[in-house]
Image 1 (cartoon, rainbow, N blue to C red):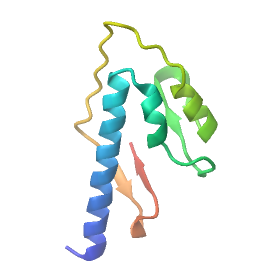
Image 2 (cartoon, rainbow, N blue to C red):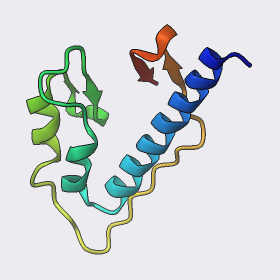
Image 3 (cartoon, rainbow, N blue to C red):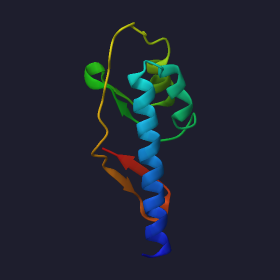
Length: 98
């Protein structure tokens, strides 16, 4: 394996861990703790889709989605993350998941 391929694998593993941390916090209704996991303000080309609530395409809309979310007692949310699809661009400058 080349150094470039190894770096892509490391990047993919880092992204998978980040996504699993996100899902852990979401499942625990700790959405406020998700905010620091997102990209920095002003990052171009971000998007997030949350079920039927639509697609969010800028930092402010993504962050506002996670602020003030309800924390219903006794509600269990469990999203499985067993089949990630992570694509790391050549050179590791960008990545996307599906």
